Image 1: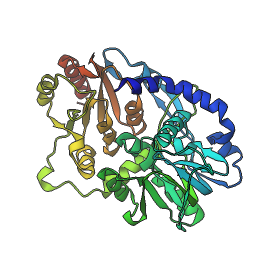
Image 2: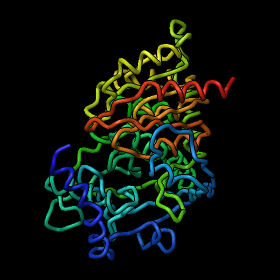
Image 3: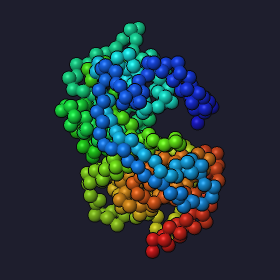
Image 4: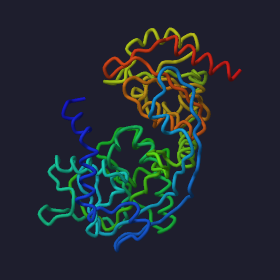
Length: 391
């Protein structure tokens, strides 16, 4: 990570706070949408509030504070779709501006993501709001547009939990208004974006790619992000019901495992050997332990989306360093996730695992820069305890 990127990430919370104070009257927040949407906006709510409780998981080494903060009772609020008429979509991250308001929901409902999207718009030569000083394209599409592009939409974890999950919002919108929207996705998307949409039930002929710029559509719909929770402590989580339904739907849609891989390993080690950070530096030593337990080493980025779903669907144990490949536990029917941490720690996979009733454990390792060095004995002890408890 470059020095400039580190400085930006460090300063972003302060920038976002200043932005919210200075431009609050021009930003349409979720609370405003749900309480009293302005003219030009319609809100369609669906689903119900969902409550859950997370216990403190099994761990070895220092217990991550980020996970400690997630322990306890939480509630994910019901979902909604917001539709804006005569809306302008702006920049690579597809900010929505309509009726004089920037729609915060188009930036995943967060000011920090709004800053990210605004910076990307500026870097592409676009002012991140409606203005008469820049040319705006006007499309002839009669169908409404549903946004499945935005901040982080080409990152695998965020695609699955922030965007692909919105297929249920699309279906709710279709049912409420009686119109089938075109789906806007990132330009030149990774193959797994179109593949996952197909398995989730979105026809390829309903997909449009968004190359950036600024374009006004007659109607733009955005799914209310499912991952903000009602809690005294900050937390992010998708709807437990919807993330489970998404896993079920895609697992059922992916072709059955071929006969020659029907005896695939039930225990998976998710390697980050193809990444630039959070790699296990002493992976050979780790594999000596994992081989004794019957683990298969996989690098998810080298497999198709369907192959990843197939591999994880029957996995009984998934082990690996924090990284996007662990997102595939969504497609497992019942598994244990063992997450390896170095210097970077994030609770998103703990939350994801527990929401869909998977067991979870973590091992804190010795950081080696942005990578990590594991004590194989720690992994051996955790595996022995987990397997022994299942006997």
